[in-house]
Length: 142
Image (cartoon, rainbow, N blue to C red; front, side, top):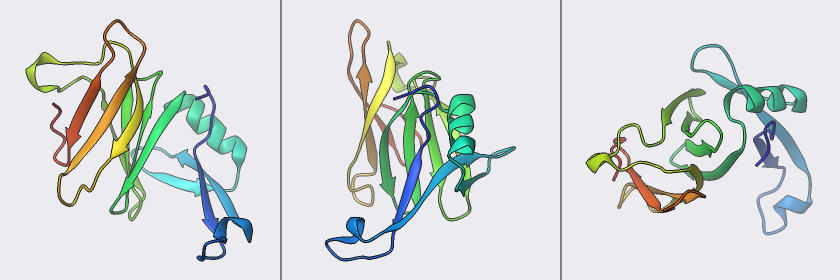
């Protein structure tokens, strides 16, 4: 939750219960031209990307090689395909069913078993009537 707060990825060297304590590599999300991204070892590049594209990001969910997170400042949901390193983004509230919309900023994301239920839940931070919003796998909002 920072204007240039980089999104970090940690790849542990181990895979047992103490994997986070045996070392690994930290890389940072960098958006490239168009709709592609890469993981870079440059924290500065990650911070620059955060500042330009996803300032004040919060909330993160992972499912089936797809990473979801939101930017509070730009009010966008980012959807990263981790397999082909492409991304899309949607303005939160732009296509809500029943004219619903965020009154303030998207905040946390709660993913459930998307293979069965197929939903991501968003909470809202601030505003006069904060609530919970839902997006299904096909991009339909409720």
